[in-house]
Amino acid sequence: MKKNFEFIAALAFLGVVGIAAIAGLPGNILNLLIFMMIIALTAQGWNVLGGYGGLSSFGHAAFFGTGAYTTTILQTSFGINAWVGLVCGVILGAAVGAMIGFLSFRAGLKGSYFALITLAFAEVLRILANSWDFTGGAAGMMVSINNGFAYLQFSDRRWFLLILIGFVAGGLLLTRWLERSAFGAYLIALRENDQAAQALGVDIFKIKMQAITLSAAITALAGCLYVQNFLFIDANVAYGSWISIEALFAAIVGGAGTMLGPLIGSVLLLGLGEITKSFSGGIAGVDLVVFGIILILCVAFAPNGIRGFVADLWYRRKSRGKAM
Amino acid sequence: MYSPTIIFEALMNGLMLGAVYALIALGLTLIYGVLHIVNFAHGALLTVAMYLVWLASDRFGLDPYVAILVVTPLMFAIGYCLQRFIIGPASRGSDNGILLATLGLSIVIQNLLLAGFNSDTRTIATDYAFEIVPLGPLLLSLPRVIGLGVSVVTAVLLWAILNRTDIGKAIRAVAKEKLGASLVGINVAHVYAMTFAIGTACLAIAGGLLMPSFYVSPTTGAAFVLVAFTIVVLGGMGSIPGALIGGLLIGVVEAISSLFLGDSLGQIGIFLIFILVLLVKPTGLFGARA
Image (cartoon, rainbow over all chains, first blue to last red; front, top):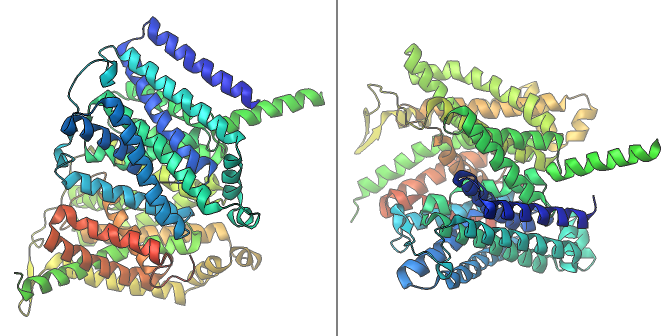
C-alpha cells in the first residue's frame, strides 16, 4: 500500500461520507459520524506526539478541555465570536501543551513517567475547573444557542459534519506533511532511539517541544468543536480521563504513527461501540468492554494497529503472488 | 484558628488512611519493580476486591475483616491468571504492550462491573464502623486503627516473603536481571505471574480494610489508584520502604490539606506533590533508577 494510495483512499472515504450526509442520512447516523470525526481529530493530535514521537500521553484531556473551556468562556462571558474563540482555544491549548512539555521534557521524562505526569496535569486541571467560578464549577457551562455560520452552530447538522470532515482532512494533510518533512524524520528518530538521535545532532528537546505544541493544538481544536456541537461542558467531560483514553485508543487501535491510524481507529471503535450498544439493550458500559477487548487483541495480534495489520496482509499476499 | 488537638487528630487520621494507601501502593510498586511498567489495571482490581468483600458480606453475611481471608486467595488467583494468560501472552514482553494491555484490562473490568452492578454505591453496615478509640485527648476511628495495624502486618509479611522464601528470591532475581534469571533456570513467566498475584492479593486486604468505612462503585478504585501512583512515584518506583513511607506521607498531606482547603480542593495537594516529585526527582525518595 503506497502512502499516496492511502491518502487518496482516506480523502475518498471522507468525500463519500460528506456526499452521503448531504444526500440525507438518518439523524442518529449523522450524530455518530460527527462524534467519530471529533474523536478522529483528537486522536490525530495524540498521534503526532504519541504515534510519531513515541511519547504516550495519558492526559490529552488537558488540551481538549482547555480548548473547550476557552471557546465557551470567551463566547458566554465575553460575547466573543465563536471563530475567534476557536482560534484562541487552539492557541491556549497549544500553550498548555508547551508548558507541560517544557516542564516534563526538561526533567527528561519519558515512558511510564511521561504517561503519569500528563495524567496528573489533566487531573489538576479537572479539579480546578470543577471548583472555580469562572469555569462554572461543578454545574458546568452552556453555550447559548445561536444558529448560523458566524456562530459555528447549525440547525442543520450536515453543515457541521462537513466542517468537521474538512478539519479531519486537514489533519491528514498535516500528517502527510509530517511524514515527508525533516521535522517528522527527527521526531521518528527520537522515538526509535533518542540518545542516538541526539548524538547525531538532533536537538531532541526542541523537536519534542514542537511535537507536543502541535499535538496539543490539534486536540484543543477538537475540544472547541466538541463544545460547538454539544453546547455544554463540565469538568468531567472537558478534563475527564475518558477523552485521553479515547484519543489513545483510537490512534493505537487504528495504527499509532501512521497517517490513517486515528481515522480508522475512531470509525472502527465508535462504529463497533454503537453496534454493541444496539445489541446489548442499553446496559451501560458494554461498548467500553468491547473497546478494552479490542485494545488487548490489538496489542496481542496487531501491534501496529489495524493499519499495520492490513498492510502486512497486503504485502504477504503480494510477495506470495510473486513467489508463485 | 485550629486547635492543636484538631490538627493532631487530622495528622493521626492521615497516618491511618495513609497506611491503607500504602498497602495499595505496595502491590503497585512490587509489580513495577519486577515488570518495569505501571499497572493501570491496579485500580480496577481494587474495585473487584471491594465488590468481592461486599458480596461476601451481602450474600454470605461475612464480616468484611473475615472476608479478607476468603477474598485474598481469590484475588491472588485472579492476578496470577491475568498476568499468565492475558497480559503476558498479549504483550510478548514489550513494555509498551504490557502498559496498554493493563489499560485495556482496566477498561474491561471497570465496565463489566458497571454492567453487572450498575453505578450505585454499595456499603456494608457494621456495628463498629463509627466506634471510637480514645487515645489520650485524641478520638480515633476503630476501622482506621485496624487498617493501620493490618497494613503494617501485611508489609512485614511481604518483606518476609521477598527476603525469606525461594519465590521471593526468584522475584528479586528477575527484578534485577531477567535474562540471567532465566539462564539459571527460573521460569520468568511464572515469576511475573506470581509477582502480579502477590500485588493483586494486597488489594484484597486493602479492599477488606476499606469496606467497613467506605463505599464501592465501579469507579472507586480509579480514585484510589491515582493516589497510589503518587505514592509509588514519591517513594521511588519499585521501592517497598518507599511505598510505605510515601503512603503515610500522602495520607497526612491529604488529611491536612483537606482540613485547610476543604475536601474538593484537598486532592490538589496530592497531585502537586506528584508533579513536583516527577519534575524534580523522578527517582523518588528511595528509588535507585529513573
